[in-house]
Image 1 (tube, rainbow, N blue to C red):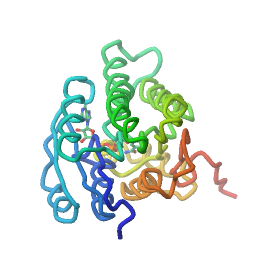
Image 2: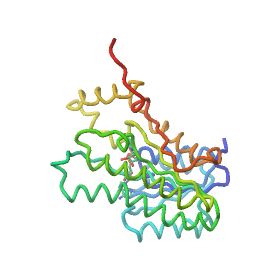
Image 3: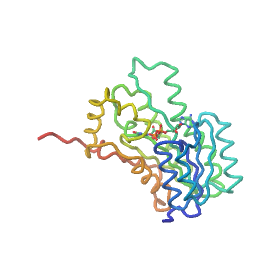
Image 4: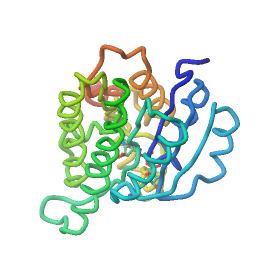
Length: 255
Ligand SMILES: NC(=O)c1ccc[n+]([C@@H]2O[C@H](COP(=O)([O-])OP(=O)(O)OC[C@H]3O[C@@H](n4cnc5c(N)ncnc54)[C@H](O)[C@@H]3O)[C@@H](O)[C@H]2O)c1
C-alpha cells in the first residue's frame, strides 16, 4: 500500500490514541513519519519505525512556540519538505458554565486551539514555499453539538472547526489544503475514565448517542485523516469531516 509514498508527515499527539494510530497508518502507506508529543514515543512506536519509509520522534509542548518551531526546523532540515501536518495533540475537560475556572479554560484553549494554530502557522510557511501540502486538525462532534458539562472542551473544538475554514481561505491560493475530522467518542486513553465501572451508565448513554451503538476505534479516525491528508482529497478544503457512527445524524427510537 503506498497512498502516501514520498510524503513527509508531521503528527502531533503521536504518542497515544488517534495520533499514534494515524502515524501507524501513514507508515503503512509509505510515508516518512515524524511524531511530536509531550510524552516520549513509547513501545508502540517500534511498529511504526518498522514499516515507515523513515521515522523520527520529537518531544515538546504544542503550546510552546519555541518547541514547535524547533520541530518544524528539524524536520525541514532533514527531509527538505513537509507534505502533511496532523494536529492530534489534545486534552479533554469537564465542567459546566458556572464551574469552569480560568486556569482550566486557558489550559484547554491553549492545547486544543493555540497548539494547533502554532503548528499550522509554522508548517504552512514551509508548505507555501512548496506550493503544496495538507493540514488536518482534529475537532470533535462536540464542536458541533452542545453537551452539558463540556463547556471548555466543546468551545475549543468549535474553534478548531472555524480555524479550519479560516486557514483554508488563507492558504488555498498557495496549494495548501486545510481540513478537520470531527470524531464521535473513540476508545483511547482520553476516554479511559468512561471505562471505569462508576461511569458505566454514562458510557452506555453515550454509546446510544451513536446510531451504530458503540464508540469508534482510533484506526477508524486514522483512516479518515489518511483520506484528507492524501492526494485523493485534492479538491477538499475547509471541510469538517464527521466520523461519528451517526452521532450527529439523528436518533434511534426504541419503537
Ligand atoms: N478520544 C475521543 O473520544 C475523541 C473524540 C473526538 C475528538 N478527539 C480529539 O482527538 C485528539 C486526540 O485525542 P486522543 O483520544 O487520541 O487522546 P490521547 O490522550 O490518547 O492522545 C493525546 C496526545 O496528545 C498529547 N498532548 C497533550 N497535550 C500536549 C501538549 N501540550 N503538547 C504535546 N502533546 C500533547 C498527549 O501526550 C497524548 O499523547 C484530541 O484533540 C481529542 O480532543 C478525541
